[in-house]
Image (cartoon, rainbow, N blue to C red; front, side, top):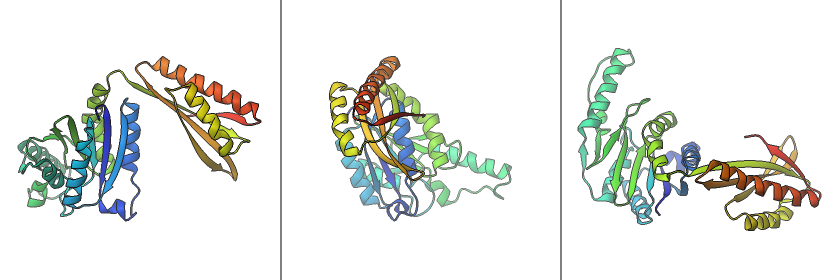
Length: 272
C-alpha cells in the first residue's frame, strides 16, 4: 500500500521470548512521528525460507517501505539478506562499498586497541555479501552496514538487531527518506486520564466522539498505578498542518471530557 510501512523483525530469540522486541516499538513510534503509518509488524525466525516467504507476502501488499531488523551479523544464523535475496530472485554478492566500510571499522578497532590485529576473515566478509543491486548504509555504531534495496514500488531497509546500531542507522540514513515520502504529513498525539467510569461505559462515548471527529483516533488503555485503576485515553491524528492536527485533537478532548464529566467521571491531563 503506497504511503505505508511494514516492519519485519527477525530472530529466534524473539520467538522463544528470550528478549523483548523493543526494536519494533521504537521503529513504529519513529515512523509514525515522521508522518507515515505502520500497517503491520511481523516476527519471524532465522530461517531463510521463512524470511523469504514473509518478504514476498509483504511485497505483495506494496508498502512504500519495508523495514527489517536483525540477522545482518557474521554468525551462521544471521541469514536475513540470504532470505531477502531468495525472495527477490537476486544473487548474494560481495559488495565492494560494504566491504570497504567493514574493513575501515576493523582498522579503527585495531587503532583503538579493541582488537589486536586486522584480518578480513570469511565471517567478516559475510557481512558485506548483499543482494545484487543493494546499497550499503553506514553503521556509525557497529560493524555490519545497513542495507537498502529498491524492489518495484517498495524500498526494503535492513537494519541490525542491536538497538543502538539500528537506531543510529535509521536516524542517519532512513529517517530523511521516510520524511520525504510522507510529504508534509505530521503526527500529533495527546492523552487524558479518566477515573470514576468503567471502560464499558466509556466505550460508547469514544464511538460517538470518533464519529464526530473522523480524523482523530481514540484508543482506551486500562491502567493501574499505586493500587488505583484508571483509564488512559490516547488521541492521535495525522495532518499536513501541525496547528490543524492540534485543533482536531483538542476538539475531541474537549467533547469527550464534557460527556464523561456529565456522567460523573473525572478527567486529568497526562503529560507526555
